[in-house]
Amino acid sequence: MTLSLSEHTQLEAEMQSLKLKGLPFAMATVVRTIDATSAKPGCKALLDPEGKILMGWVGGGCARGAVGKAAREAIKTGEPKFISLRPQELLDSEGVVTGELRDGVHFAHNGCPSKGTMDVFVEPILPLPELVICGTGLVAMALSELATRFDFKVSAHAAPVADINAQFTHGFNFETGDFVVVATQGQGDIDALRAALSINSRYVCFVGSRRKFEAISAKLEMENPNFSTNLKKVKAPAGLSINSITPDEIALSILAEITQLRRAGSLNRDCADV
Image 1 (cartoon, one colour):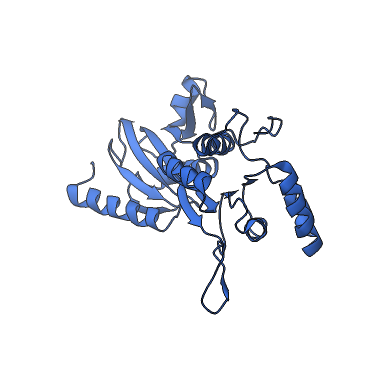
Image 2: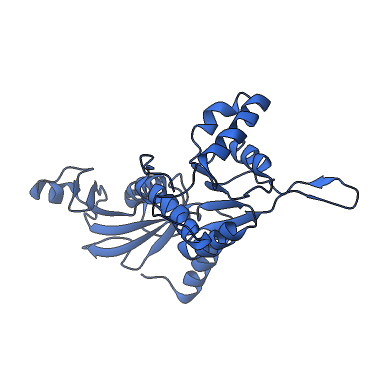
């Protein structure tokens, strides 16, 4: 039995709630069944990172274990999974071992007495990666505009400014960020790098010359020797080598480098300087 309109609406509402909270989850959809199965094509369920069903239905205990495992792995890797639950007799006749991956299909044992077969597609829904941009200059603005079209959660932070009492309000007060771009260009460089080095991020880059970055790094190391290790991980100058000159081109080179890391899982640090 597929979802009713009311159930579908509730499922959509729960999905939106999880997305707004920035929580990872997986959507499991039954796409095919053979013989007797409790769940039918079109049945759906939302699962948390532990593989627990939050809402919906994809079968009884015989299916939930395999679907839960697939959901855990999909959320961890970010890759969808297609699983086929089959009775042992069918697996044996086809020469397939439980847990085997063949042609993109993960096979699992269905121990239900009904001996039905059920294929389930499990898709991870992960929070958008957070891109923190420090600075309000032309490069920062160009990058902010460009990144929003590539499924990033973009947050921009301005340099500290003095109020009428000559007290500073620090703009670099972010506490999280998967990717951090320091594009302050003389307007709070040290404060921005200090903030970037104080969080656990996948990537930090500095828009500016290597000489300028080395001078700032020396000051930060004198201030806090613990920054030394993290400073070595900062990409400076920022971006891939595409002979960029204009702010838009520099922003493009930075986003290309971030995309390379995001999609490939590793950053080519052998690229030439911008």
